[in-house]
Image 1 (tube, rainbow, N blue to C red):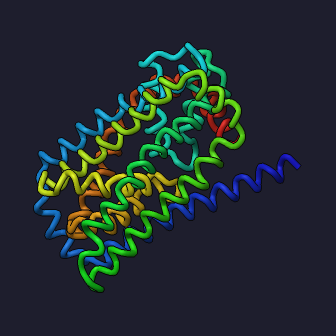
Image 2: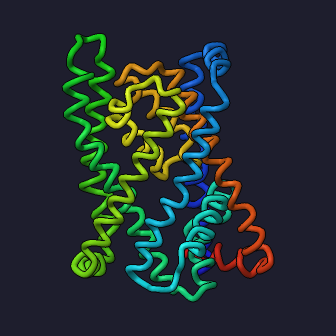
Amino acid sequence: MPYINGLVFTVIKIMRKIFNLLISIGLLFLAVYYFGVDRIIEQAKNIKLEFFLFAIIINLLLIPIVTKRWQLILRLLTPLPNFIQCLRAQLVAMYAGLFFPGLISGTAVKLVLMRQIGIRSKYTLLSILFDKIAIVLPLVTCIAISVPFIADTHVFQEELDNFPKVVAAVFLVFISIIAGALLIPRLIHNDSMVLKNLLQLHKGKIAAIFLWGIVVVCMGVLQYWTLFEFNASLADLFLVTPAVIFISSLPLSIGGWGLREGSGILFFALIDIPGEVALLASVQVGFAGIIVSMIGAFFWSKDLIPEGKKAMSAAIAKTKN
């Protein structure tokens, strides 16, 4: 029976990876097919390296911000981790999750590294769970606030020619409802009492964690503003970028590829940004993430390779469980 369960788990995992890969490749293919390779290449010639480097710098600044939010959550449960330990785990998890998605997950890496400094796996798992909520809530809040403004200022002022924009706005509402009504309750279902106690004991810290999430959203908006070479309206970007960030973070593709580009084309059209410009900006966001994730390779080799098969086996076992 354990052998059969393991085989079923492996098959499901492989099928999920194939599904994610097909989503990424399919959406990217559709985007390239729609705009045409020649048109995209012509637009790519206008990309300025300095703006891409600026986007990488913003991505670098995001890492300590995201890490600080996760550390605040961990410190609700245990006093052990310091910022450097959390930063190391965050970087290694990013690297492993991006470059070895079929072998080891970022969650498993965090469990192994936190266990090395004496933090129970239960606390690490709870912190990751609450961290996901801390990601979703600010995004859903921004999306819910932005929908009336999009409908009022960009969607319904023109006639039938802008029907795709109406569809996009309705989709924004749909995403907000789904995230609020299904995703968050399912995330906290098994640990509702723990969450209730945390909210009662640490209201100020919970508010701080939410505000850190808002900062992350603002940094994401700033990154796209940079890649649009500051030609887009920053206020308009605050209306639609949270939806792009949220959709690209859904675990339905490989590293957000395809979802990020497809949602970028759709939602940035609401603020009159050409599709090929939105596509290339989203691709640059993806490459900026890859470059920053490579920093984790140093910590990966330093922390995991000396442990060899033991650390890898422990991480893979945590993934299966």
